[in-house]
Amino acid sequence: MIRDQLKHKQRIVIKIGSSSLIHAETGLLNFPKIEILAREVADIHNQGKDVVIVSSGAIAVGRAAMGIDKLHSLKQKQACAAIGQVRLMMIYQKFFSEYGLNTAQVLLTKQTMLDSESRDNARNTFEELFQLGVIPIVNENDTVETYDIRFGDNDRLSAIVTALIHADLLILLSDIRGLYTDDPKQNPDARFISYVDRIDEDLLSMAKSTTGSSVGTGGMSTKLSAAEIATAAGAEMIIALAEDFRILHRILGGEECGTLFKAHPHEFYLMDYLEKM
Ligand code: GLU
Image (cartoon, rainbow, N blue to C red; front, side, top):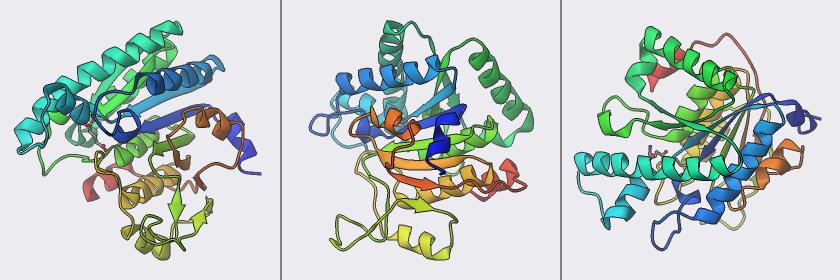
């Protein structure tokens, strides 16, 4: 049973979407949720596993802190990311320290991932952080990115991190329960898909019709691109609901939650994917 084997995963990347960290009404941080996330991740770490969090939310948190209703320019977005990123990290560090753990901020750019020396440095940094027992918290370095050269969404960024550090499981947590045959918000007949052996053309065209939430950037099609990258790099991937972060233990306990994509490792060149993005 493939679900059962999830218990044995040793290196896990967990991606959290913006909408899962904030209150929808105000855009301000949801502290009890983040506290539960920290407790869950701390416990997974205490089981001897390496865990990375890829956290969105910098722009949304910065925007709410400044009371900005709508962002009108790139520089405004980038300023909000700069403001929000520290707030996010302060809160993560606060909650993780309650469980005796340290966090580390890792901000990545597409440009640095394309450069082999920077990529090696990033990989070495992750390895050192794992050695030190620290929880790396990753985001895109939004303040220096341009429209042309950026990841743009943390779904694919988390898959690239998975490939970079040879993780064996990627968990995408957001406001979507998993993959459906159609957009469940529009079509009541949409069926839930709990297991994907291979990502084929049918699946990719199905994903085009589904939408994401209003705060993050990733819809179902960026999640499928993430699945293509992660499964090719040899990791299983799960899309699941972030409503209650205790789902992490249920997933790792082998329970049937969310959609599981089976790994199909093949010769994989991270560069090829990055250049196509
Ligand atoms: N990097 C963006 C942020 O932290 C989020 C990107 C995404 O939601 O995928 O605000």
